Length: 404
Ligand code: FEO
Image (cartoon, rainbow, N blue to C red; front, side, top):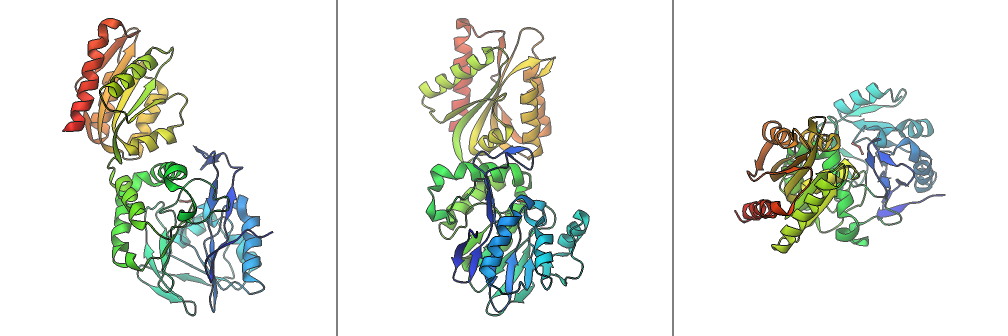
């Protein structure tokens, strides 16, 4: 049975949704699923833009046959060769032996590395600025290195304004019947999935995203549809989306607010985190998010980090080091190139308290443009009433830094 949506009169979404996969890339939880988007253009030639993950292959093949309605497939444009998009290419080529494949030189290199079989099919290497006509539609190609792998390109249909944007503008979350951004309440239902996808999958490559946006700027006024490989197709409100991407790609916080991430073995450090949150709220800063590093998957923490301006790291000392899940969180922040945040540290332990110095070193020496407040709170086993003033001083220093 086909499950297909029209993007325009002659362009179809023929992808598939996946709610069975629990971990995207076998690391990121996707409790609301994910979509793999592929698109077919019916022009004088028939053109498939990308395929889907192997798990979704059968649905895409049924969709493709339905839309082609007996026509042969002439061209497959592969914008991105990561297997969640290219794994079904072989099935497509086996079913449509006359299809030629269009991609970049690096794309075909990745294709060979994975051992995807293209024998017997014409391959056409394209590069930045090349154009190709399929009849009434003419497309142009823009290379998009490191968004998110070395080889992607994006393809702009100059005739209908569809931008096939590869991973750029993608999102976690299955579409479940919807397709367009104006068919959902994005602020309530989608932005968290979009942010978590973008910053965890492509967050490391912010400068490359900005480079792509810069290259695309002269043609942006021609774009009518943004068609990514995961998530919603955007057909309006581009300024809103581009503003979000601008923040994420330049590591600018989206909003003033405090993320408190705590690591607590017996609840004592958790108590400090809660007391600090209350202090901040009572002093007027209500945009406070408290997270337990032990039971919050790091991908959600990273999404919060890209959202908020201030981060409090509250960690017990463990084996004379940082509590391991907190250490892992910090290393993931570093790996994703997080920068330009104001940080406060709460350390705890029952002897030889060291977590604060170690967290400070990672923030200061291994990350960029992190401002670390001097007012560190050091807690021996349990926060006592006598330390109320220390807690208040820490809260004040966070609030003062927000006013600067
Ligand atoms: Fe969804 Fe980089 O692939």
